[in-house]
Image (tube, rainbow, N blue to C red; front, side, top):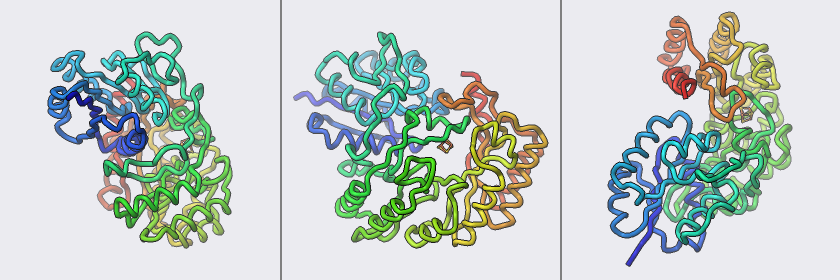
Length: 414
Ligand code: SF4
């Protein structure tokens, strides 16, 4: 008997989107008989094995920094299996540069949020139907390639946050989209710039399910700005935020709730004593991830951050006073960062470390989809790299800053 397969290329960098997409598929009765796998290793042998049973659809979520690897893997698959495997791309890079994904060898590209478009595409492929009317699906025949803002925005409540059946889990995404337009960030483009929250009812429902079915004792909530929950994104909504935390931490069997620590973040100007005091009462994390990004007000202004360095420092002080260790995001090499401004950022890092914060360091990468996508990648003078190395060795700095210079250069060349 024929048994068609969906084989997802699992990678730790795209594990959250994998969990969300598999969640959307596993509750969709159209795919009851579809064999689904998401191997971390042995992707090609899984494909070879599944081809013995029926059609294989191989899906990749592609980040811009992964393009050389994905291109290579796609070429290998084509060489080995020709057109017997149907290749589908989604994720940030495919959304920002869908033609690039087609040129790599993919048959179909899903632009923007995948929860609706990806299952719709899967259904049509399996039925051998026409895909041209599925919003967000791009093929070589597509004339007008859509941008995420032109597409329907996904209602988070309509989809599970993860795939409990397959045990592919991650944080519960409680907020998607951001109303700010920081020029180094691709989030506003990728999410269409519209802020949406998963409802408290729905979050509690999935927490209960996760406790019951997967034995969750701890859970993470995910948001681009944890303190914006419940509002339109530009200002806090303390009542709604507390209602969420109150209900979520009351779920029987759940011992710890993490929010506002990596991979979530908070914007500095949202931080104040009353909000953090309330927050501290509920969350289990000792750290609070705060995005300051630069020690130069001019660089913040050029990047369209809409807060100052002083607001950043105030947020760090406030976090410390409320029992959090601030983990501060900093980006070195942003456009407009002169030697003097870079020096200010470094000085601020030392000052914050002295106060009790830790630094999460990044080097600017021109991400496709961000407003800075055509700017040169950040490059650091040797003496700055050695200072960052020193902070890292002392355990004061984390982050993948050391290889981002190279990744940024690769993006620049693409
Ligand atoms: S960096 Fe944060 S605040 Fe700025 S646009 Fe991106 S998600 Fe929004």
